[in-house]
Image (cartoon, rainbow, N blue to C red; front, side):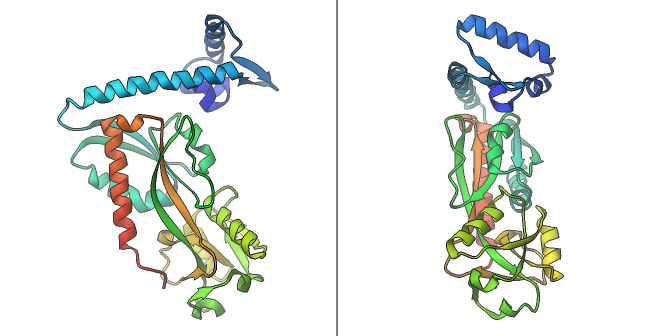
Length: 295
C-alpha cells in the first residue's frame, strides 16, 4: 500500500518490488480483507486509495518510522555512523555540492550512492520511494515541499541573476529593471522548475510578459546560447561559469531559489543519514561563502 501511494500504479509497484502485477494485486486484495474495509477504488484504468487506504498508509509510515528509531538507537552503540545512503540531486545542485560532500565523508564509514534526477520539487514524494535523501530546489515564493510524509531540512538560498551576452546595451548598468527587457528574447527552462517560476513571478510583479524562444534545462547550453546573442536568461548565481557572460541583479524584485533536503519522517535519526545531512549543510555554508557578489 505504501509503495502504491508513492508510485501510483500496480505495475510500478511490481517493478520496484520484483513481483508480478498479479501478485501485487493479490496482496492488496488480501490486505483489504484483513482490514475489513475497502482500501482501493477504480480511477479510470488505474486504482486510487480510499480515505481508509490513505489512513493505513500513514500508519505504515508510523511503523517504519518506529523501526528507523529502533535502528538509530542500536546504531548509537557503534563507534561511528556507517551504511549506504541513497541520494538524489538536481544536476546544478550536484555540480555545486556533491564533490565537497563526498570529500567530507571520505574518511567515514558512510557511503553515498548519488544519482542526478532532473525533476521538479513536486516529484519529491515519488523520489523518496527510491532514495533516502533528495536534494531539491524551488522558487523562494513557492511553498516548501514538507508534508505529513516528508520532512524537509532547509539548506541554502541561491540568488537568481540576469545573464547577458557580451556587449549588451544593459551590461553597463549596475542593476536592470525587467521592464527594460520587454523586447528581449528569453532562454528559460521547462515549466515547473525554479528558474521559470521566478521568471513568471517577476513578470507578474512587473507586468512584463517575457518572450521565451528556447527552453533547455542544461545551464551549459543556456550559457552558450546567451553568449552567442540568441537571448538573455535568468540563471542561478552559482551555476554561471562561462567567462564571457555578464551577470546583473534585477532591480526592484527579490529573485532566488531555495535548496532543501527531503527525507522520510524520522529518517534523520539514523546516524548515516544524519551524517549526510550534516555534510550537505557544512558544504552549503562553505560554498556560498566562496562566491563573489554580482559583477
